[in-house]
Image (cartoon, rainbow, N blue to C red; front, top):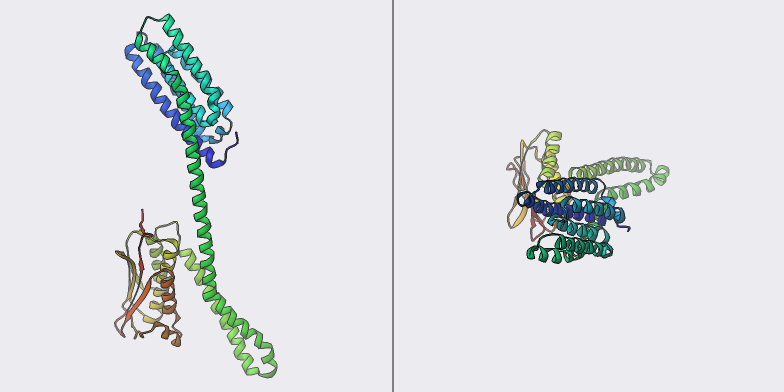
Length: 394
């Protein structure tokens, strides 16, 4: 029987559970035998066989789960162990318990085809029950148990087969869900990178290309203009390299598999070490969606860069709070400036950082607020709604 890798893991896990359950039930029956049987050596023999076989089975399934791909050898080896328990228990209650567990294990590795195993085990159970009733003293309680227990073998096998099938389907569904989420995350990541490149490096390189196209003609007709165009190409190339480097730095600083607070702390430490300005962070333990956390981390990085470049602060305080909204607040004690009523007016003075932060806040579904006065420092705050997606970090 060929099983997919995820089904192999599921069958091996369920097989280990069956082995443990069978061992517990059989050892309980054998343990009772230590107190009620005249010869405790029978119960001790059962204990040894069950413990050794269960330990060996658990080790094999843990280290080599792919063994469930070969159910026939598994069933044959386990059937030999069943006969060993039969001999050790002399047909006692532990044998019936162990046989039911063997049928369940067969259901795990064989599925409904385990019928070829369940029927012989039930027949063996009836044979053992008949022998006990014929050779032993009359005991109506034993008769009821011995005759009623063999059908349990078939029921245990069917239950295990059904449980294995259900678990396999659940694992398949879980794998599909995870794969779908990964594909969606990859698509979102590609779209995000495309937007980043378009908004920064692509625009700069487009300007460089226009200047480069005009350069050959200008060299012949307008040498002074050609000199200016060459300078434009040089500055544009440097700017594109810087923007690409900043983009890569931002991607490296945000590690989606780590806590968001750790990402913010890494950004603050990076800016603090490069500028020499003290940056203090207080962050609530929250884990926003990947697109939100990326935009917030880039907003923080840009806000810190702007504060250091234009405000000349001595101290920057960063706070992340989570109430009805997720709020990221960056406050510096620097020079400050007069904030226009329309932030887009800042582009006239080549102040694109705040405009870019406002666009990122909108991409995250939130809004950006900037408050500042000359000589009173600057506060940048972005708030994002938290209807459902934000969860507490573990």
